[in-house]
Amino acid sequence: MNFHALQELYTFESGDGRWFIFDPESMLFFQSERELVNWIREQQGCKEEPMGVPQRWYTLEQKIVQERKRVLKRFEMASSGIHVLNRLTILTTTACNLNCSYCYASGGAYGGKIAHFRNENALQAIRNVLKYYKEIVSIQFFGGEPFLNIDLIESICCFFKKMVTDGKISRSPRFGATTNGTIWNTKIASVVKQNAIFLNISIDGPQEIHDLTRIDKKGRGSFSRVLQTLHYLQEENIPFSVEVTYNSESMRRGYSVWDVIEFFAEKGIYHPHIVPAVYKSDDPQGWEPYERRRLLEYYKVATSNALQSLVEGNPKLFSFITGLLRPLLLKIPQPLVCAAGVHDLAIDIDGNIYPCFMFVGKQEFIQHSALHSLNSDAYRQKGHAFYLQNAKQHRNSCRKCWARNVCTSCLGVHYIENEHLHGKTLNCGVIQVVLRTLMEDLARIQQNPNEWQQFVRHYQQFRLNSNSISLGGC
Image (cartoon, rainbow, N blue to C red; front, side):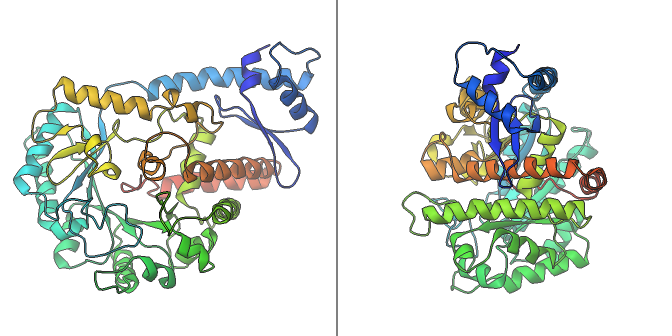
């Protein structure tokens, strides 16, 4: 008997009295009888191999051990291979026309100067990155408000087109931009269309909520301008996603997470990225303890409703669900907390390289200057040091977490909430609630062959027909 496999299992009871067993290593989950769950819990407190083993356990153990071997091979593949840069985020400017109440970036300036990234410096930085990495898969334009420096965006897109034409690279990166959606004109529309720039639009839901927190420098709400941009994008078939910061004001005004999802569905937007606002521990806007508990309940309800909408063929999903369904169903392990510093990098307006845009302006996270060659021991050493803080196998809080192989989170959120990269965050609780709810509801759906068939068909359609990977999200 595999005693280690038994010790690692996570067991729980659903709200309707069903019992579940989840193996963190293989990502297999089972609905089980209470007696077996009780037996497992009894053995987990023992240091010796158990006596009187239930026959049902041998069946589960065999499945778990076999799947663990398969997942281990996938884990090794995910942790190795020729390194390419999946996403390079370029801050085109630190200027921003909004003054959002919860902005972690100090209005886009990150505590520094307000300026544009100079064209010649940006192109030199890109050249140095291209010399070091085998490929850049995607470029994400960021800010501030990136479209305030549309000329640089156009220049970078043209630069890559010429690199392809000259045979210096085999293909151009995909382009994306994270924008507040308030600045839109003929020039921006032309650059976006010509270069197939995927847009990630920040909007916090209904006008009552959005205009409380996403205001301009004069204190005016920005909802009507963002909505106008979204209508244009839909009419012109320009691909985009929306990113929602679900903040304490949303809750206090009576809007649940599902309310926000339905709001966007009514406007033909079916896959918002909805993340809880991140606050420092001393921020007066922050979540009260009872609000944190309510937030987790909101995500639980939203998960059940969203999964049912998928079964019914009218999917109203959100990113936490799609981000967890894929590794859970396909058994794809996630060895990192996030892609920062490993598959993703960010460059600020001075050419400094950071693991991610979430760390811009924090001197201790500068890894190198992209204005100089990256082929140096110092750059590699800093990159490796950050990797050790990102890899779950080196993180105590992650090693002990039952959701570790399925989840992805954001180290930037860890730093804001905890003032260091370790420990747990509100996001950890959200991920665990969503994952538990998915397992409970998937087990229920599987018991009805017709519903399960519908779920599989509609989920496959969703993955084929939607651009479910936003270039802009964390």
